[in-house]
Length: 538
Image 1 (cartoon, one colour):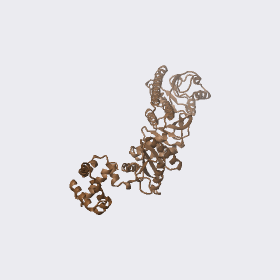
Image 2: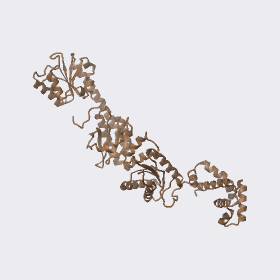
Image 3: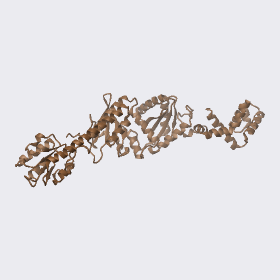
Image 4: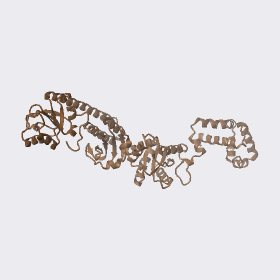
């Protein structure tokens, strides 16, 4: 067996230990004299022989049964007999201690120990023909089951390919079929998709780049690296694009079915890469950003491992969430591609991805010292160059990845309170929480029926009067409130006499049943006017 060829899995050919435990052999009192640590070898056939050179009839993996009658007398002949069995790859030698021998010959024990060939003795007479029938039926039945399982694997991956499944679907299917953790990475060792089995993704991806770089590339499905990963290459247009890795589990060796699953996984991914217009790095960033913003990780450690596996520095960093709302989906996709390329070229560490058709999300990983607004300003200007119609909003910095969801939530609330293309403070191209005043708060709540009801309750009768009589008392009230209750300033601003303004204000008080000399009531009316402007789209 070559070094890179995985041993058989459970469910494949029975092992030497499993065959010895069968009633047909257990009745003979089997005892492992040599090679007790090698009885996990698979038994691919049973061979009964009374020849002095049985190896010429073997192909490897056979359990050799003998009464000991043909065993050479001289130690050199015994060593030659054992050497031939070991060279051909026999699974074990079973000798019956009934006819010729009553204890295993010393020369035979020494030769088997020297070559690492398991030697088993039988204290009682055993029907070798019955042994072959039982074991062969077991082997053939297992082969039939393995063929059926292999067929199901091929059918499952064919169905995935025909329906255009993406990398996430393919990797998850591989993880479910194998019951193992499966990871897709690109050429720079960024783990883009992880399909965890029993272990969490955090445990599988911790220190991913370092571990992956110690695992040499292979040109086919094979074991590789100090951890014993089963890996297979993934290509794109005939060139290497990355690879898919199946991670080992303690006490469970890889087998032919695992190799089949991984080979079909790599093939399905190669085909999917040809047909998918979106780079998988972008897909991975989008998924990671959505998971972080919505807290869809099992634990903080899981989030850190996933982000680090994508190249984001998670130690001694603080994080700022930035959202860019764009007019159309195509604009957002173009801005996503351009911004990701520019950030990568500048060496900035960030995740960039679409969170929804018209919203682009960015997570900046910053060092603790520099002012975060400078970094966000540079990012914002780059966004506006890529998409001039964008509205950029930022959340406050988070000290760790666990606080990223809050930063995204704050950025989203700022975006909701900002009219598309709305002005930003001098010297700044993005919006943040401190910009959200009364008008922006009402803008964010404009679809709430309580805001609509409040504006109508406060100003409805005045609006009805203006509509019926062709007056513009609402403008007079607005000028008066903008002048902070100063009638002289309100009259001058409106180009009216003070007497006219006084008369109109008395009419307004009568219609609304309010006292305009009350600061509290003026505030209530001012809020209602702001709400009315927002509802009217002003």
